[in-house]
Length: 184
Image (tube, rainbow, N blue to C red; front, side, top):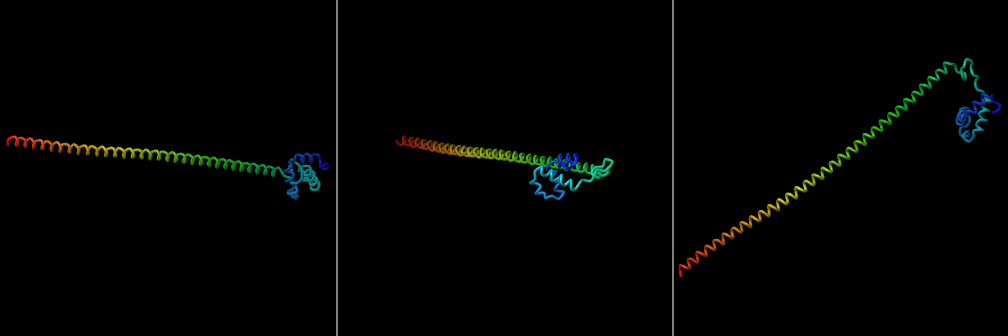
C-alpha cells in the first residue's frame, strides 16, 4: 500500500470493503476466497494489483480514465435515463400497490354489504316467521272461539228443545188433569 502514490492511497482507502471485493473479483480473484479476507488484507491485495496493473493515465483536457468529454456526457445521459426508468418503475409499482389496496377495500365493502344484506334477510325471515306464528295462533283461537260458540248455540238449541218439550208435557198434564177433573 505504501508503494502507491498519495493520490492512489487516498482513493483506495476511501473505497468500501464491498467495493474492494468487487474490484478484485472483476480483476479475476476468487470471489469466495475474497469473502474470507478482512479489510486490511483487501487493501494490500488491491494495492499489489494496482502496482502490477496500473490504471490508464488521465487524459488531457479534463477527461477521466481515458474517456472523452462526449463519452462522459453520454454516460451521464445514460445514467439519467436509467434513473428515470427506475423512477417510472417505482411509480408503476406504487400505482399497482394503490390499485391493489383499492380493490381490496372494494372487496371488503362488498363483503360488508353482503353480510348486511344477509343479516337483513335473516331479520326479515324471522319477522315473517313470527308473523306467521302469530297468524296461526290467531286462527287457532278463532277456531276455538267458533267451536265454543257453536257448542253454546247447540246447547241453547238443546235447552230450547227441552223447554218446548217441558211446555208440551206441562200442557199435556194440564190437559190430562182437565180431562181427569171432568171425568170425576
